[in-house]
Image (cartoon, rainbow, N blue to C red; front, side):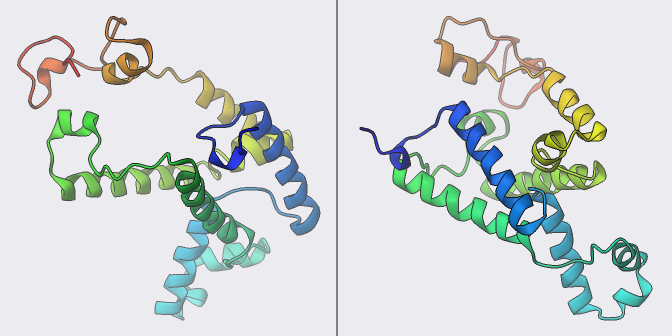
Length: 204
């Protein structure tokens, strides 16, 4: 029998059931929904408060959170962030599904091999996603999992929009999964991108 800890992927049915049980545990023990993006918000607020103690009296954010009984703290959300990181690290190590690659082939093909540029772009993209999550008052875990199972209208709208949004995979991704003869449709004209000479999809 295969050790599940060494598998590179699990059945979505098993994972979905596990997440459901974890939600029961979160609500039953901590009376708190699953969610990650709020932890980053609270961490930033606590750092500001540590650097500038008077912020708690002058910044409207702290007054608003205190009134709602949700003052910034390192709680379940913060532990969940740590757990996701440690769990992902252990999973990749046990399954052998880990790469030391810093610059993916798709990025190198488009923008070259500049490591600082790649890292800066990844950081900016992550920050932009986090800003969007807080603007929506929840991320895919807060809305898609916790909010949906509580039948929150905003969460159902969020989830429907996410699932309905069309995505078009990169040609190299299609080729990787479907073979080199698969039909490939780039998301934008390849001829206008750096390092390309023709209007055809680059071969990988």
